[in-house]
Length: 204
Length: 254
Image (cartoon, rainbow over all chains, first blue to last red; front, side):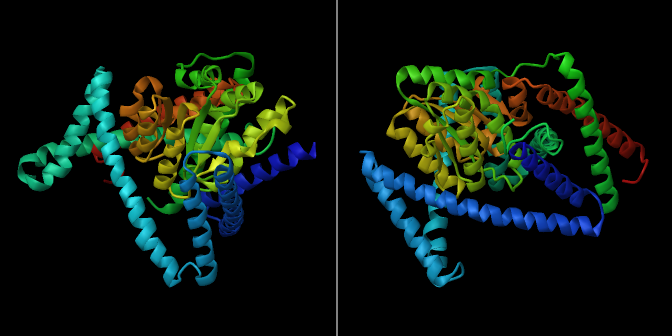
């Protein structure tokens, strides 16, 4: 009974206080909200530690058991432990830590995100080859219009000014519609937890 | 409009939502309503049987939605939509490979899979390595998970949760190995990346992400949530039209 009800009551009350902290202009509720969010952040740090240990364990197992990509696993373990030692020795603002962040991590991530442009173009071309539906045609035309009104617009702003205005309005309307729906869905999923209908933290 | 008024309006909106949710929850206990179908969620669990026959596993990418961030509800909705898949995987003892780039979601996903095993009395069979934290940043996570897909041993790729354009790295890797992909997300950037790879038949878009539990579990509270979502959507539309009309007529300021 305690295993089921206490986590549920704690989750409901925490959710309710955080929600009221945002929605009611009462100072005490604001302070309570900040306090609870700080706790959540501390818990997230512990979660990060567990996740880090899990990452090491998975790749140590891959080194000993899996035949493929052993070098990748070795590289991950080496860089994870190396970075950990560096941060422990110098702190997050240390010179070495900042070097790793700005010279290795940031360029690497930028390169990966640039790669998504290639994978997206490949996926778009495959879409036109494999699935020639009305939706696919609308998608490709939309992508072409966005390309015209962003990249090409910068070269010929006078020619594409009106088209850009039209595309901007349509894009904004579409995105707002999508985000309204997502916000409603998110609100109701949260309410189900606060009202105790859903218990993601414990068994039903 | 000052901040206090905005806060109180938001509170009123949440209260109305809670009242409608409670009312519909009670009503749907005795009478199951009919909603539009969300076939993608139904087919997710079918993947377990299909890949089990091939002797491979399902890969589930849960994305980057932290449980203490803006995408918490998206991640939770994704897990709820995967409930039937997790139960079936536990029953057949063919656990999926679940990957995420958020530590809080990693813990919750692990707990949900463990509970799926515990519900059928096989908690001992749960293998913690079935749920993996792959990397902390979205792009590195997608690239690292893509290597799992190219390694082999996976027969289905489900990309469901909070993603942006990095999702295309996952679908591209799956495509190269002829692995079937499906999934969905809520962000416009993520949908833009997933649509060309999955098409509308295999993609859950935007607010439909939150319909997964109603489609898969069918509990009265899940169905009530879907019904409330539909009612509130119309209220928002009426509100937007009225505000636009008032603005046109010059009533209540600019």
